[in-house]
Length: 597
Image (cartoon, rainbow, N blue to C red; front, side, top):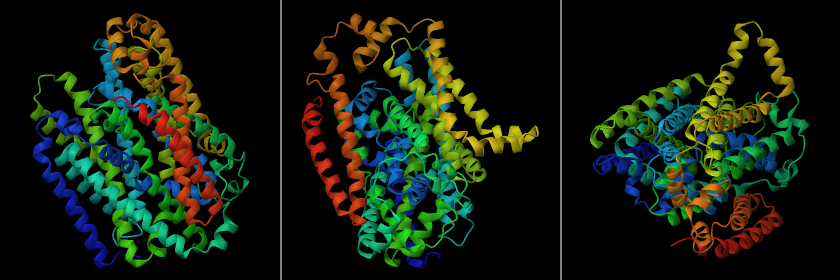
């Protein structure tokens, strides 16, 4: 079904508003680098929370989540740990404060704040910037694949041409408006998406065939060890992996927990906390980031419930979202949904684009051209932004499957940042050389994995390779093997080279107050127990662990509560509401009242 005139007019109006925001903020954002990339660190925490939540409400990710949810039911929540979708629990409990106290401008600059300005520190910053830029560029291509599949069901033109035009429009307002433009547009997009999520949930609640839904879906979220129904012929390519439910869940759970401990991992998310007015606001931003995602889950669940009861067959799970929106949603709602999902794409794309351009300019160009003035750097940012759009388009045109590119990004490319970032927070002996060697090791291994199929086919071993992947699920081994190699490289390189300057480590320790294996530095710092843990004891290790557990339980209950209500599982909804109330009340006393002034 294609869009009518009213729906196209609504989309065009939305695009004009977004471009207007970019033009409005052009002068303010172009004054200096901090204004362009961080909004002068004056953005209210709730706006940053809205921006962070909607920046992860993308079409590609939503299409993937809907597809997995469609096949696995509520147990799919065990797979979503790989996204680190409960990372808000770590951020609000302590990590957001650590990030903000570094006072860096970009995630890669934060690396140099940790390791110093000697050769090792500069190399670490460059390595982190390079890995982040590579991840961002593939994220742009990943977003392109998602939006092009959505476009296929909505426009009477080639889906990739439509996606290209949308990327260019988004790039213009990011280029003009900088961080302030991105934040304001994100807030508007969040309002639109939350309205769409609520509207879809209400429509689904009132029109669902409850008997049919309950006969097809188990409301339990408890994991199982295997899902043999996904190992049969006819399951879409790439989704046989979930037949090994238990091992995949353990892998994704570990990946999600490590991602939470390591912080967002050098991606654009850290900008939201670096832009906060204070560590207190950064912590509240982390909490809002998670809580504001509730409408996304309400929309996802409602779409899956409708699809399960009204769609006959699905050949491509990544098209369940688009098919349901255009064939099963009321006509009065469809225009808003299309605009909302395009807004979801634009919010993620704009944040990613702003993040990668800031990394390249601030961390790969400026260190080698320190004499460039702010206005020259901002103009350079325009060129870098355009180049990133072009590269993202190339990657997107060549990629074919959301599942394929997502698995490679999360399980092969992400470890090159995740494990070095993990060690930088919790181990004092980690130095710039160890960080750089770990990052480069991860990039090399991820590159080999990306091209491995082509390499095997080029030497005549393609069939052997494909059979191995089919029989052994090679993707399951990717993350732990690459992670172990990176950790070993980090530790060996750090111990084989000179440690970071003691005075620099002391300054970092006193400012950030990290936990973990920092005993030698803590003893030299002379900090009292109250100074180290905060005047109100918020960052005592046991309280941090307690708050993480309470926050994770509260967020999980918050996410599944509307799904149980829409699906008429009222007993499960009641249990979720009780868990949410108990955990939220506890967090008021153990977390909120203890935030530093």
